[in-house]
Image (tube, rainbow over all chains, first blue to last red; front, side, top):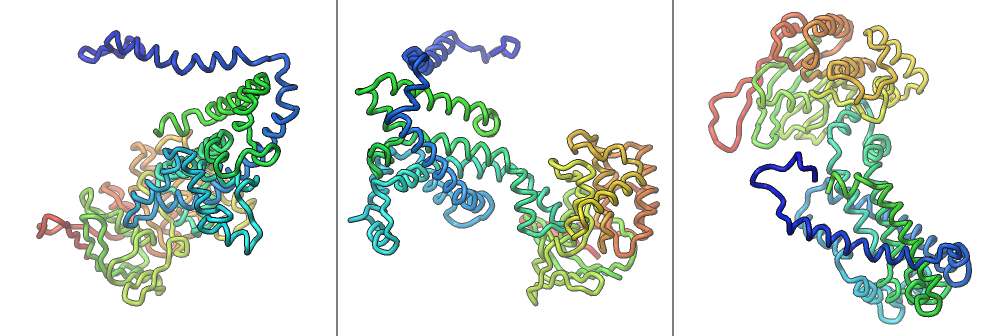
Length: 269
Length: 224
């Protein structure tokens, strides 16, 4: 941006400045509008009572569990994608990334196709053998959120693993550390920034999940109605609470962005 | 006490064809860049398995392709200095030196005490609490050297261990290194381009040579 860096032949034409300015306005205006509508004096009351507080509580619990699932499943998957060469690796990677671009509603429909109790692939079996019903249950919310969040974690961790100089682990091996010791004491330690960034972005994604959740788990107050679903409904009946909840989600996302500044979206992308 | 390595290893375009028997001595490895000196050290360290042949150290088979024996690096008790002195970036210099001992079962406190002593002896005690990023290239190299020798390895592998030092420091560290290596049993390999290193540190020299390349795809290095 500084004029010192301007080189002859690479000057920024005026319309680029104007376009960039409008793009920025386009992104910021709705946020300003949201902040303007928040009733600051009553915000605490709005989010700590009634369906809003129920939704926040449910969102917090389900998103944390979904993030844990994404971490436990995503770390090994990221490892395989980053470090093991096999035929069709790029195709597997594309499949893993699919939920990132898939319309969330389609994700929800797909989850129904797999885990639906009456006509899902393994839904009936899960119910008969374990008595587990995922659809229209808090567990279903967790599954829907994890499905959407997992690719974000895999992406962050895979790029983190690729950026680790293998000689650190080799050097640890010559120092007498066995494979699992190297994993816990060296690899994981070097991976920590990417892991934290991946967890943060996966959690933010799980927290904001709407389409797959409402399709797969429904919208039952106190059971499957997460914060985004509550926001959508409250907009009609209690706009003040809807704006208050929206602000909470916005604040959480800003906090996540600040926390992972530079580690995932900045330098490595 | 000896190293017997007869076999070949391929890495990328490079094929190393090796046939060496080395006793309890300090051996210089020389040859032009890209000829496979580091690859040779990696085979000995257990970071790279042979494609054919056998490696035996002090009577123990470390690698035998025909019998499918391969002892991984962490079980070989080697002391290695990598070309760019890879110190673990999240540990202090002291903990880096103490780490190999802790890995072999020495308690944390005892390992740290031994590490402090070793660093002090070498005149780098004042660096103990520094992180690798706070150290100069030469200081990192000294720490890496102390680390590689501290657990009395049966095989020492040093990849250009003095390259980051200036002339004065080089002389000083070289004589310290010579005393250390002479007092340690086993075989030691030092990759170096420096004629003074070869003359003052080493008992013999193995020169890596490349015969006229027969094909465009591969390059064979012969080690005898």
